[in-house]
Length: 126
Image 1 (spheres, helix red, strand yellow):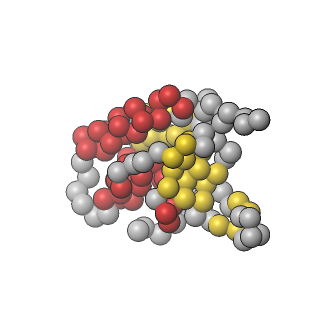
Image 2: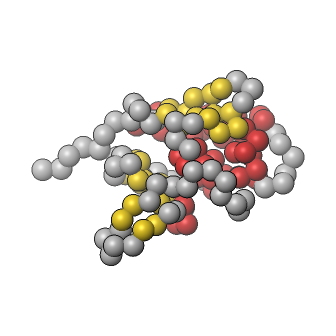
């Protein structure tokens, strides 16, 4: 995997008091990078590896534009850039998270941004 040059996952205190920089958890969306785990509103979401890698990179930079080239390098390494393939994976991610209110916005000619401001909060269990 490429080195981390962007904002790391939000650190959360785990039950045993340790910090984990590889977990993103905003109360609605949870991503455990090392375990390839995604949950949205408390429900697990299964993603193919490339889509997981793209989505986790977007979540690490939520509300910020990530260039298409950075997303490609993160998921495919040194393979030649293929914008069509990346767009297909982004389309699948949009379809997967559409009902949750998470949006992947395009900045034409630049990249993509995960917008979390409209995500539906998890239902409160009583």
